[in-house]
Length: 357
Image 1 (cartoon, helix red, strand yellow):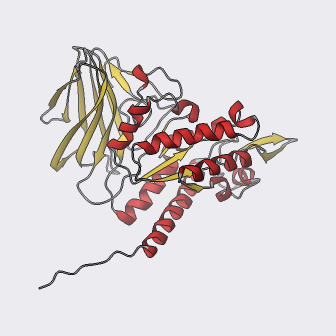
Image 2 (image 1 turned 90 degrees about the vertical axis):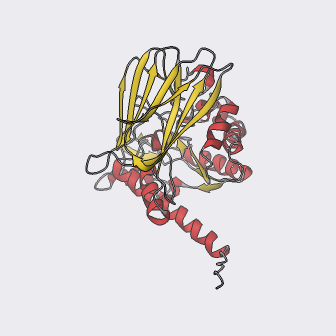
């Protein structure tokens, strides 16, 4: 689930994840960045501890080496000795057990050595020194399960890490939060195209969800003419995402309603319907479904009504949803996804073949 600040704090995705995992099984939390600035990305229950002089970049601000930002849009790197510990805490404040881990790293000429493994357990060693810059995926499997994972850079050269995935050895789904606050199609263009394709392919997704637009209401490409320039740029990003998993389904989520104050009253921003129309057209051309989040908020005047709700469902910045608002929208999105699946299931019955004696 790619997107901007609407999803970067995992509010909406966490609800969709919970609902789908209750229906299809809990495969785990999936892919996450290893070192972040929590002003841009936040994942509840994920504990990140670091030692050493780690750097990190994000899609919104740019600056990542080789224009490679990883699947989550926030890579990390270090040139000296350092370490990271990551794990998901349960309600009992214990580290949740997972069985499969994959670590996405950047190899490069002169790259340093890293080792990784379960805290207190045997570590796997890998050299990122390669003849050219390229992406590598490392894997660990623990049949009995493991909790927190430790990653160490040995200090013999630069080490770059895109992220790590946590999965369980059981049937089910992951719904992976890949949002960065401030993200837009402009920031997505910073991604090295072949790198992004490989990053998406590495997760073998069944569904790609893309949700940006609120940060682009002032783009010249959107405001000029009929918005065709923005529509084509949006279509380009959808095509790049889908290139890594051409058989995956695709869902575009339209912008939330946003407000503006006029004569002491909060009214909806006039640009939102135009953005919805442009994104809907791009989604249709790309072969993606479109979900109108503003319509779920009640359409015109939705933000004001959600703001006046008790408890309030929005922030006072006239752009973002509160925790309660995010949870409500997440429930409605889960309803839509599950309804679509049920419709597909009814139209595509699975033949059950019984074993013959």
